[in-house]
Image (cartoon, rainbow over all chains, first blue to last red):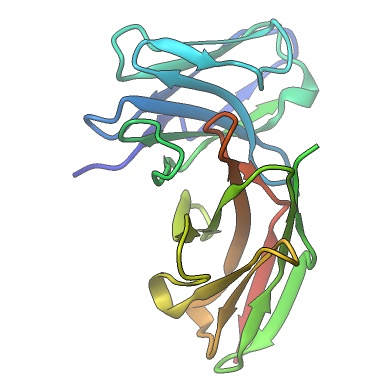
Length: 115
Length: 114
């Protein structure tokens, strides 16, 4: 079946604008994760959904970042008042039930550039 | 604080040579350990993972890794690399008594040349 998909693949915006990044997980996966990968760094955790609810949002850097998963499948990461420091690759991953031993399957990422 | 250290940012090797990519972690609780590979313009793909049991773990594409609890290491090895192994490799952990998020190292770029 299809893997994790993310749209858009690239997004260029201006400082202060609002952006939405979309993630479509593997069908049937209840767990969904967002990570952010800055240049030269490994991915860093942002938020974890179990079904429709955010089970762990401890990685969100500030209140400009928000994510939703209203029907328990597709998720949208929303960034308000973007700053140049938000430029990074935003990765989405899903796993079957969210058990720690499970493999997390990653999408190709959305490359965000804030000018 | 828990962390993952990948000791080499870049590893250049010749085709058919052996390679070892080093990873150390620090944690006060037990962990699950993972190696992911990222090919250019692609998403992260799991190479292998250690959950429990045998400390030598075999993964895809001929890679293997050994968990060493006393040295808190999980080094990745391949006895003979190919040009196609050129990629970014990430070591990651999940803490068994905390959340389910992966904690990643900064990555190692493996460059294989002929």
